[in-house]
Image (cartoon, rainbow, N blue to C red; front, top):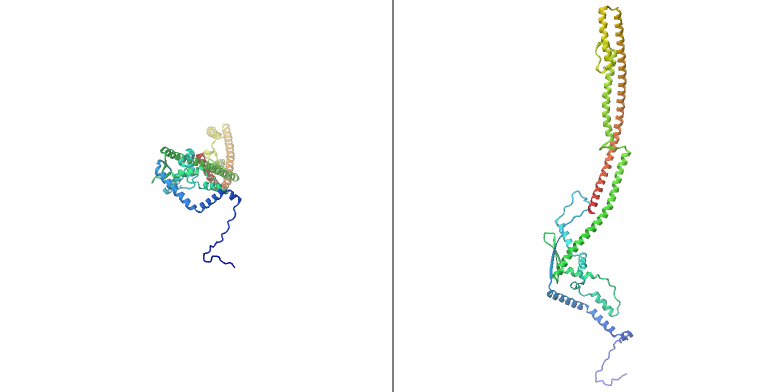
Length: 428
């Protein structure tokens, strides 16, 4: 038991405090490291206030600079016409361009006008990465943090490589104003810088870069279109070749031959029909002549004239001779009497003349018979050939229906192939 030697006085109470860990050898030997750690802790705890203050200072500095530094604006005008490039027209009636579609296309081209691809060309052509006016990209926070981490010995965080032209492009975009004029396809593009000549130069460079970009895009589109059309052209050529081969094979299988736009069977049918008509007429004429000759042989020569169809030079001479002898015999009989030798001789000559006429008529009859039989046989052969050709023409007509279908397919393939061929030549 302990007794307080000073009971009237208040005692001082000493509270226990946790003992801090002993400093390592590195911390005792490197006070700068400890100071930087404390600084980093302070910055991390108050980063919102620090960033807000830095941002406010940056905005204030920017406002002062804008108010003090003069700016000059240069404006160019670019007409952007609506385009409608089609490789091959697929519809019967092409769709009409609507005003809204045209306006949207111009608005799209306006965005392309100030796009990174176009402005990158300007940055490179005008060397804007070396221009201090376009280097104002603000605080490089990733670089600042990396430097701070390195100074305190902390490992550097993995960072992405930043394109040095991006900040210049962003600053240039802030200096550009692009707007389409009302009810037109004209875009007004304005560039503001601290130098009037620079503003004009950059504005003209943007217009040139846009036109170059459009030319490159059209060339690339034409190249892709050419490649695509080339592949499809080969495909259509193969289809056309196959269709034409099918037509020719079908013709060969069914013996279908065209001549002057008509089937050969049809032409032969027409010609054979005309020949049959002529043969029938000749057979009828030969038959009539033969019948007249037969009738003449059955009759008597002095009972009438010889029909015209049976007339011949020899028969005419014999008939004249027969008439002369007949008159002489009649005169001699009247003068000398029927028993006179001269009358008997005249009668004998008259008999010989009749025999000669009969022989000539028999010869004509035989020739008429042969001619009639020949024309009749020709008529029969032509009729048989015509019947055969008609049957073949009917079969060919049925096959020709399928042939026309194959030819239509070939014509359609040829039309498509020619359209691709013409379009390929146009874009080259």
